[in-house]
Image (tube, rainbow, N blue to C red; front, side, top):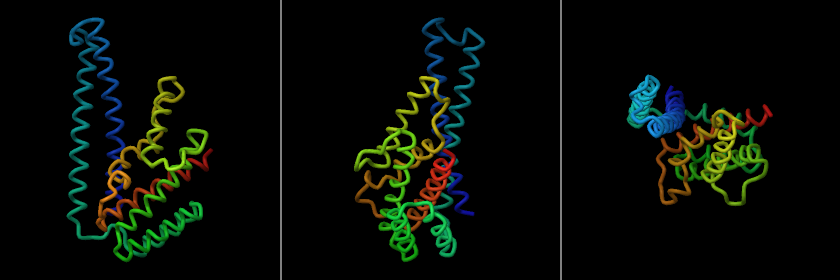
Length: 224
């Protein structure tokens, strides 16, 4: 149950990114109307745009509130997010979708989580995440990332490319996998917080993030 709640929180964070994009678009139209016609509220379309802006603003505020409340509930729960049997079964399923090195890292992470060594587990999981995002990067960009490029760096390069494609009408919105990565990567980027000591719950959260990443990217690669 807690795993479903956490994945729901990640989805909310992804949705929050979408709301922010919508908000930027609305503000763009408001400025254009104001520049060409003065006060947008003089026109029915201007009134509707402002109403839409207020609605999206409220959705952004509500989403932030929901995320905070869900995280508080999780932090206060004494229950382990993933029991050992489930962790072992899910690891076996995920290992089959990884290359040899990433598979070894995931197995090491599983051992660290089971034995209460969360910081080491987080380090291994981050390496797994970088490995699968490299595959997604190669698919999206048409070439492999530079050596040493971080998870966040790869996501940002893909974001710039997809934003350009949206401007050129080659796509209508960013890929859902990219939105998910961007919504999660800053808080979970170990290279941004090298001194951080991870709690057991944080290592388990990271496992859930990496699990979804592996499954989504594996599906994307197989659909091509």
